[in-house]
Amino acid sequence: MDQNIATYIPEAAQGQIHTLLNDKDLQITVKKARKTRHGDYRKLKNGGHQITINANLNPCRFLITLLHEIAHYHTYQFYGSGIKPHGLEWKQMFQKIMLPFLRPDIFPSTILPLLAKYIKNPKATTDSDVQLSLALKALDPPNNKIYIFEVKLGSTFIASNGKIYKKGTKRRTCYECTAIDSGRLYAFNPNAEVELMDA
Image 1 (spheres, rainbow, N blue to C red):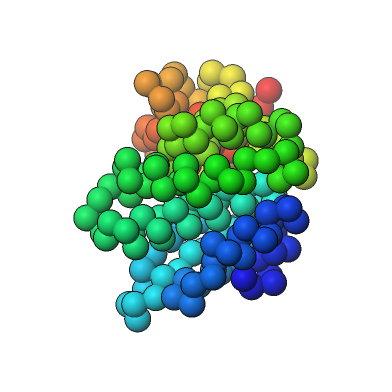
Image 2 (image 1 turned 30 degrees about the horizontal axis):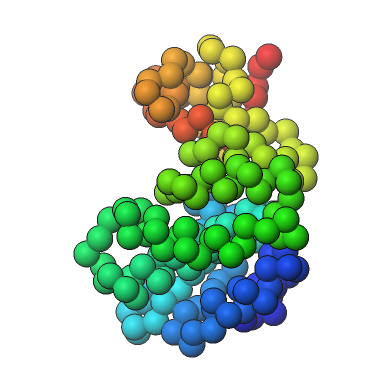
């Protein structure tokens, strides 16, 4: 395992991660923060495999993201590319990989029970789990952003793309928000972080 990766994850998890990453074909790259994802996995043209993870994640979120992407890598190794990215095969692989890390010396008590519940049926992102997402955010340094679901109906906010939107009603799982500059409607995940413009 690259020593650089060790600095981003809880110390108690480093030995297990070293074992999981003991594959010369798998390259781990830490990148600057991206607005649309915490990390990703892809097969390279040269036959190798690459996982990229955002550098701005707190240790717990970084570890969860790393294990999420390692599960993609192992799923590809076992099943090839002809399966759904977050289908049953990936879910089972992620559960298998994550279970040994569900320990109190790795994750704090505010995270552990929520994470244990989440992996029973993991989604494409932890951001889809409101309670887990809030608990992970609590470990981040304070900032001036809040979640969409905390924004009052009709209030305006600045999204991660720098544009201004007005919050509308909730449609199934997402909020329908209006772009101020164009009047077009956009769907926002309830856990999208935004900067409030008015009270």
